[in-house]
Image 1 (cartoon, each protein chain N blue to C red):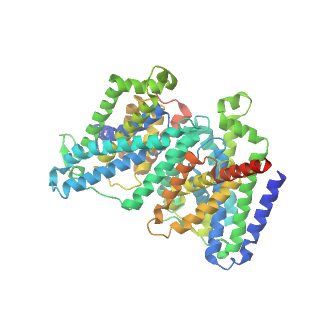
Image 2 (tube, one colour; image 1 turned 90 degrees about the horizontal axis):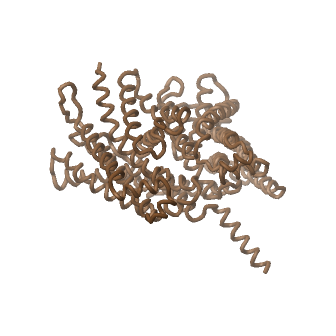
Image 3 (cartoon, helix red, strand yellow; image 1 turned 30 degrees about the vertical axis):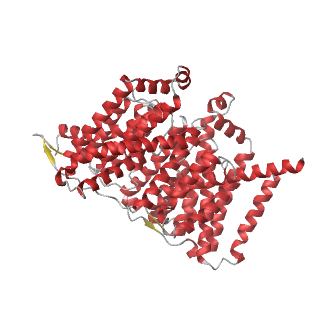
Length: 297
Length: 314
């Protein structure tokens, strides 16, 4: 029924948010070397902050239909900055002490953090899903050959901007150079005078800020509850595994692959929704079997 | 060794006598006693994998797989619950070997990631195959031993004894050297002749079988399972928080940790601000234990005893 170009377009649009979320995960893995099981919770917290921004803008300030772009303009900076500092705090208090401990302890720590955050949120704000009902979720942008919701286009545009910005930061700035140096060789970086712990803290904050932005954009597509983190985390994991652990450029290609493959499956395979939701696992499994170092190495 | 076995013997005698110390007629307390044994089995089995330095987030999933094996066996072929236990063990063993061979060759984080994803995938599969699994509604079956909770207590006890046996055996046999070497440094372990992957896969499979047996007991005991319940991540959390709190890499630790934390859970679950959010406590226990008491309660107690012995010997 639907034509191939349309399927491809939807797949590409879908992959934007995937890349934004997975890039943060890849940064904490690549630069700090820690698997962050709480990354999905950063997305969830970002979504909640975006949701509160929406409540404030649409309630007391009563901005009506104009609220969708404002949620992006206000919600993303606010939630990204908030999550940067939350993550930096977490790094200082909990993560730094375990950096030299066995991998098992590091993973247990971030997994424990994720459980704390999910359940604290469900105690404080109920387990009920919150729905922002933003107009852009349903408003259609007419492109001639196809109509897409504003939310999809905005999600992709925001993601593309932030992902590109992050690459510029990593490639062109002094800070990015330092991050890459720390990622390549911790000891060497220390020897040439890079404050390694400070760089770790900033990298972790950056990864959380990217997740927070993704969380705000998630508001445009679905309801948010304290439990949205897990699904987000798993898909990001599959992208990072597909890209090769810590390979930051690979994240874009892997996201495109996952997004397009999911869209193709749900379009052309009968009862494809189930297969689509399990696809990330199939990808992890196949990659681990065939090319454990990632697709492009 | 002899002292340890004598200790477990005494524990089992007390545990076996428990129903006759006045709680056999109290259905709630007997329920709790059954569940306690089941979770001790789960906790002991998780700890065996942790000893190789691996983080398994799939123990809840193997528990659910065991529950579904019994349920599907009953639903499609009227397999009785006891034969269902065997079925569950076989299914879990095969699946764990397959999962282990693919993921345990690589760095530990791949295993952790794959096990977390595995749980989510089983839930999706159970939802999407309604002809086999009953879909969303799940599967019901008649109560184990017609609801006789004393007899089911002894069945759960039998599975628990297997878990204790595995845990003690791994710690006391030659394999302990391989396990410790792998945990300390896999590359070095390989160099000195330990077959790293084979050891990890074998222990993971044995452990998964035990987790599945716990689930296979749970299904006819509770009489119903569905995807949301069977593959609830909270059971994977329970499997790891109990040993961490009690003391990793020991046999006493997971048992003590289960008794204390599961009792606390029973209280928090009906107490207003906590309710389903009681898990926040488990999260905090994990974080605090990793940061401040990496050897758990057992570690605290043995340090204290050693210090006391040192002081009295002066």
